[in-house]
Length: 451
Image (cartoon, rainbow, N blue to C red; front, side, top):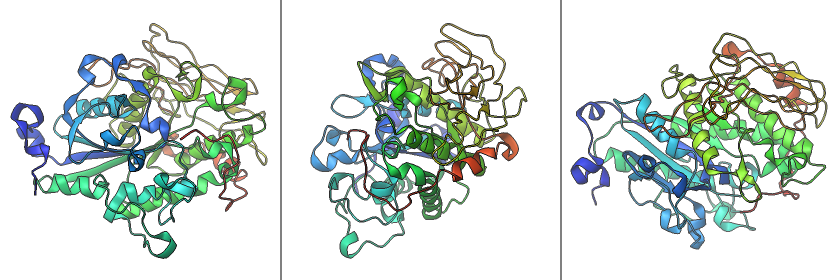
């Protein structure tokens, strides 16, 4: 068996004695195109363009048909760096740097498997049949887990791509073949834009819960931390977004479900993306390079908060409860198709964020236009407080941000919009449950993110 690059190149990928003594902390990143990422390598600081001290295993299923990420599919561990023909990146770059800074006694490893234009109903669920419309987007749960997937695939559910080299089971085997103990530390999930354009939005909470439960069961980690990226209010047509007018309730429903799932599960958190700048010149589905760097830092802050180590990777980490001790109360309610946690006209309350001085480009939270109440958020260099959407989404607090890890990159508002501490804020649960309807309708109806 070919020795993995873990054992290669002394001084390039070598382990320190202290890291050898600790389990490798492995993070799984998955989702659709905003997890794939459109960050431009030229806009990364030099020290983040290749990070050989962090191991990276990457797969994008467009490689199944020779797409632009074909050359990026890993057959072994390599340094954390942008991938694909255009050398693009998502949140993994700054997230990995932050984890390496937070856990200097551990080697950090990242497995990322993401594909644009995909949804939980047709593509990511456990045990699904191939999608006849877009075969290369099929059976992504198995594409992520490999033999760890407990589902049976026979008959019309037979696997269409059974021999892919990069799956979580293969990545773990390559580590274990070198004698490394491995801790599967967390799942980071950035997805939901697809469902926001069709009827699957109204059952998104149920499909997301089932997905998380399946992942935990098959990995054998019942309390696996999960951090969700809430889809951005850039999608609303009133904000110039790509989803058609009349579908605002769909966007509301997905955003509400993401918050609700985090509120009801003490091992799940969500992070805000509402203040992210869309990718120029006019791609409101996706973010610009600075946003992907900031998203990685927010994922890191949220994970560290779940792990009880908030603040280790940046100046501070903010949750809905507020690091200054101000509790959150999601008072808003919603009717059928209403705003749920991303409150509509009935209003909501956003908690105060951690105290901090405003830096360059910083700013307070901006309230939405239809009745949200936003509390003060602190700002850091290059950042700003979270901004509520025009349809009344709840504004989460910002926090004083600083550079990711030791690199000095991706400064700005930390903006981690996590669960309320102690399980507070369950007013969103009833609101989101009112949105769950039309379950079982599988076909997409317009407003879909391009693949």
